[in-house]
Image (cartoon, rainbow, N blue to C red; front, top):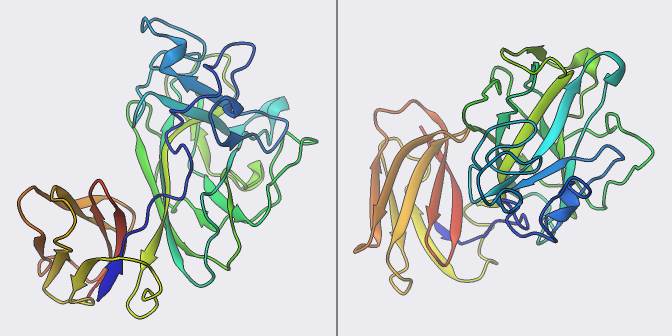
Length: 310
């Protein structure tokens, strides 16, 4: 099988690039290059530049109005609201960005991002997803639930009740073609949302405030349909496999390649990095049958490949 490299389609995926540093007067996600608020209720932008001394600052990192949390990657993140109670019922904050390229019909895409529940949240919520559309989502008449069905949704049983670290969201979907906008948030009304009380929340908190960082959308690769992609970079074989999997990197590319095998929900299982070789091998004989994800990366490319273990 011949596979080709594909980069992350999400612009400014860790929110490092700023229009200007967030402030109390102007601190929504539109201050991060490439990102927008699709509704009247604005998601909040946090960046280390707002608190260069490391002390508390409303929009600072790591210490801000909703959390004490370092970024998962770099020095910035955003906050969305996935649930609220009382008079704020069905309140939602979303974030939206236009992708670097349009998605191809019939192709599979891996969607990943990291989430952390804000320290001040009195409630937790496991419902979060991503909706892909061919036009920008824009409804400044609402602060509530957007009426769309997300293509990817957090798996049942994957708890996001984590205030001390970051949880990985990882899902795969097949594009219908033409999608080039992505909106992240909770698209489920409160009556059907999986919410629960969270310990040590602020007395003024009425909902679940979720931090988001390090977002990626990458195309998966398959034998036969990838011949049109430029530059054969990586060979992965055999696939499917019952025992081992081999990875060969084109020798014309610089060394220093990392290869990581993950479960289908994005958890890392095996990782290797080599500076002086272009061949990798993984023994999968002890792993259960199923779908795995192989990520190959160096300074020139990122490849994500679906692996079938028989």
